[in-house]
Length: 171
Image (tube, rainbow, N blue to C red; front, side, top):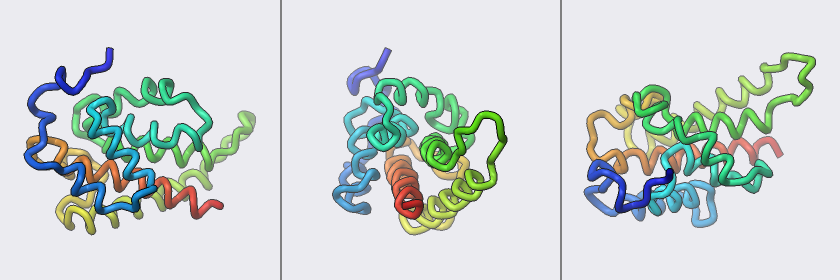
């Protein structure tokens, strides 16, 4: 069951119109803006917003991507561990970096691509949110901010932008 905006708890209500502020940090036609739009609509969690923004590139149905990433929000199942938005970006890069030959284990290229994506993500977080929020760990990014939307909207944008940058660099 998908929660609509009115079904979500007050925790999700931002103090400011953080979506507009975050959207302005990214190019108008970027995946980051699309990600922020999904989250603003209150229909997608952080991981879903990032992953579903790349449905066309992945050649996958958005509903399937939505379902695959549901448990990744707020640091994996709301445990504030590894950032769900970053995990979604990792999935995107892994998909394009992986060798689909199931008879051979090949992770070197994928690991290098994911490491580069993480560095880009961290660099963007420093620019957007400051040095003290530059982490891949959800609770270190959001600290004790309530509502979560304040830092997370920027984080989702950074994850989507890092994935878009990584895909552009592969071309």
